[in-house]
Length: 485
Image (cartoon, rainbow, N blue to C red; front, top):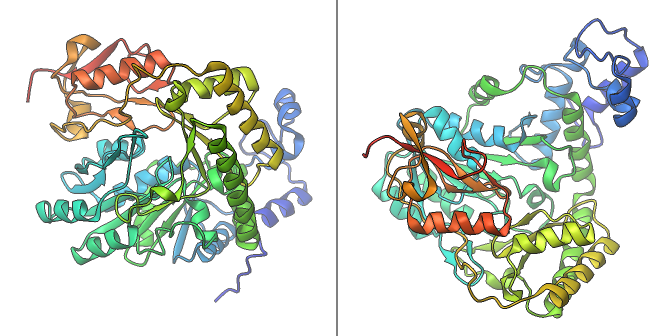
């Protein structure tokens, strides 16, 4: 058995050795360590281009790792306390899709909340799995969807004992956590896998004052965005596996869609970031928790805004709250979250993570500084003073429970017709409509279009939300299934 130390970074060390050998490249990529594209090299730097390389024997191969990538993945698994970790270069979208494709085949059921990321529904389109939605509770004041109640999951299992898996967000974009441990126990009692979207929960594994990490709570697979709170490069993620899942089968599933030319820039960023978290994660997230707590207190002292935290916890639909999430309710100053988001960017050169119709999310992580938090607080104070207005007429709901008429695969591939928005009421949608971020569909394939949903879409467009999904880029028309079901 090979000895591993979290001080090691096998991929980093292999790339450094490769650079020292000054190998003449007669392989791809064609820029040949940057020499063939001087403008790109000038912009990104020679150090970056010199390690933008292809798989070779000394650097291993992500599709079938036998040396340094295998060692780096083993160190990641040890750091996160799981039997196996996979490096993913297609973002957490690819990790989420690998989980669903591993657990479900065509016609098989998966129990999940409706406020999942679009990648989950995309996976069901690909494999033909059938969703059994547990509609989350709503916080009517904040206009956000919450977690799944354990009793609601138990009822879904009772009504669908043949389901193959349960899917949970840990946490949601806004920081809300379900009772993952209780849901995992229910899943396993009934022979189901528990899959966790931890795109926003990498830090849970490295601090005891944060919500329980899914794999420690009994999940069988978890998808982590290392590039969000873990410090790696955008599009680099991890897929964690427990003992109930076959490592070999999961790798086969991953290789169905993952590139055979995975970026070593992304891979080495995972290796370096894993080492940093394993060695310094506790102190790093001590700092993040402190920064957010300071900002939360200062924002709440401004007046009208509400930066919420663990006071929301109710032991069920809000089992816990991620205190690193700086989620701010803005509707009380008469502005939608997206309006505050736009003002921060356009007037104060501050880029927030998310603005919806009622909330703003400022994502705070390993690279933030106290002076950045002070600048954000000062800008929010000025926005309240200079831009607040009467809140009457503002739309209340952030999430509308849809009526599912058929599975997403059936609707997506069915014969369809394009209609103006107003003419789609009562029809079955065959594409997505969502604000991005957060990428949670307002409508997904197979769901019935209602007047309330169309009102929400028009309102979100009017407020300036970035709308994505439909074939019609202007979102004046929607594709619906031909005829009726």
